[in-house]
Length: 431
Image 1 (cartoon, rainbow, N blue to C red):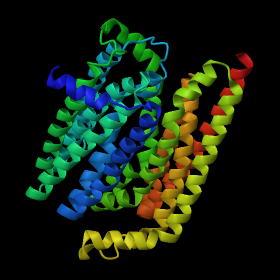
Image 2: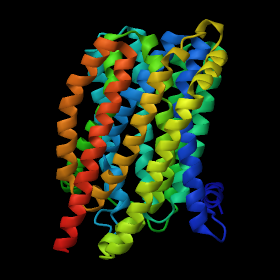
Image 3: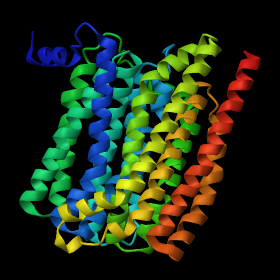
């Protein structure tokens, strides 16, 4: 047995209770990914200052993530619910080659006309590359989940994140320069895809790596509304950040990203609940077991709502001392810079709760293949976000950004819950 075979076998090993391993590793992977997203900009601010921290926050969490969405093209929920294997893994893989190339070109085009300094543009471009590679890895991780090996998805998320983040922070701390650290993170991300994804997938019996570029057109048609919807979703989610980048300085981007961190915790907790049950919800619906479908949907909705209420209460009570502690970690130069944003912190946490709810009903509509409803909701809210977020940021700065985020998330949650329940009723009647 070759070394590569032994390595793949080690990663694929689950022990006697595979279902438990699927849940545990999904939680660990989701936590690592969300934790990195939460603290990286904070650590960059600590190491190289608020301006470069703000550049990193925008490049990593906002624009880079937007290009990640172009790369993954909204196909994850479609691929993991393709239980009938209408498309082979090789088809999804070839499609991902095309979308990753498109994401890199789109990122370059945006930066050419952005008006950024050369230094900021290069840093943001490297972060785009990092996120696009993340989007490429997603096609492997989606296939792991589709084949019932969610633990492999969690392991890939965990180990790739640890590898790339460790390399990034080591280079940043050693050189005190953002650009070399971003370049090192890109190299580590590429290595992680080969070590934790490609090496394993090639030894997964259920994965059919054959593909046909002639199938790219029907696959694109099947997913294009999902892609547009997810792309618009993230724009709406990040509209306040884009508005800050356009109308305030880089430091403001960094501060807003810090108070925005709790949304990652809420989404992480929601992901722990939602991801493992997607296949069950799909099976219940396809099997016309509507009673089990509604029971599970109600339980998940109640749990997400309870977690959201708890998060808001904790933010209101503990937010101020937590922000003070974060100021202390950042250094004396940041004294008073975060505590003053405690009200905005609570507003953002409340908005994050509504975002978690809408994600659940987004997946319900995907399972029911109601892409049209999804797209209509996002199209309407995108138009609203393009007006509301800049207007509120120009008027009230960071507080305006927080209020714009809450308003948009509330409207989206209401739209998705209503649309999802309506689609379920219609589907049951026609089923």
